[in-house]
Length: 557
Image (cartoon, rainbow, N blue to C red; front, side, top):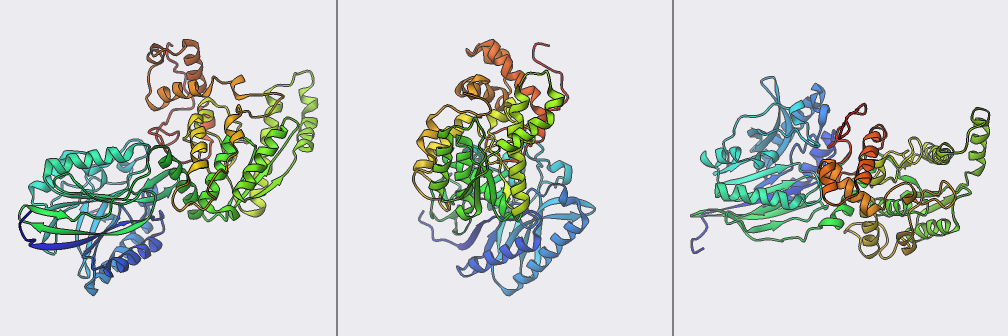
């Protein structure tokens, strides 16, 4: 461009990690970010969606006392902008005319200069915003120091109407606060939507996304700026907090963001691993646990969870316990000890033989005349769960459970046994993904991870056939199809909801598909009682896939 710029604007993108319900703590984060941005000459700091309340606040947002606390925080922050420093674009639940809105508020010159309300309220997957918020009217731009800024909130950019209205009413740029949770491949979806809105409106767009774990959701950040020519001007990293200054100039043909740092993004398996670590770390930290305890069996699931826990919390806050019985192999004992040594965690061995024998003895009069079966196997698992919960009660560390999505899908887990625990970082990872992420962690770890580099999961754990070791020479594939086949069928049933006939038409054995579909249906009651865990797929169990427990429908009648 040959024109001289007519105006300049410095906008700070605050990609930060709020805590739902911690209004004072979130307001303190706003002040800290504002002070940092002020030191770099910023005119405006933009935060992610509903930053003051934390997102998603769910039914907490319906409490009048919580609404009042958010309003007090907004008023206090607005008053502080009278110092002539940067303005704030911050999100909060906002009561107006008896209706509660998901609002973005512009705070400047000591006052609330403008408010805008979210129009398109998502009500699918993990979102229930129509339950708690009223939809706002189609918005016009906010006037900010001689600039007309459009502020569509998150879902508002996924359809044309809001952006079209903003463009037609004179918006010069789009600043978008977001609470977009992670799922595999979501960054490309966001970018494609943003490019479409830029093309349609001819306006540059800054997309500011939340970071951090909130129950089962993980927000990955990955904020970015697109210019009107669709070029990527700025890219923030994912899974890391940042306050980044962006420099804007107004030319004769509109505003343009100066090219800045474009951080590489974690994708695919690396992003899944980072999401699990961040989700576990924030669940532990935000709920005030001193650390975690888990059963380390010598198998791949518990080994990967141990590695994630150390990456999330550091070795001093992770306690691993081996709980061997007569079916626990020497190989498993050696492998579990190898994991603990590689990670540098506390490792204890608590044999369970005496406890299992006591339980079997107590039940012997009732079970007389009946052959041994899965009942006795489950006693082992349930005793292990009880012992881990007792360690948790005594020392305060949260039990982390280790079941994967393949097991959760088919019911290959024991209620009140290996399902015991407060959180499960593997809950939304299929077994084949567990193998991939274990191999990945041995050659790579995410930035900021607190665990050691190098091999932390012995290669023998990755190579050996999976087993629950609840009976002699037991292997998972005695009861389940090979995991590569099982996971392929489950992905079609769970993620894509394909009819059984369509899956069979792809070449899968009809009896196998029917069996897996039956196992999936009858295990719903177990999944309802499972610990929460990180969402990484398009359809996790819980928020995304809500099937009735009592349900007689089966394909084919």
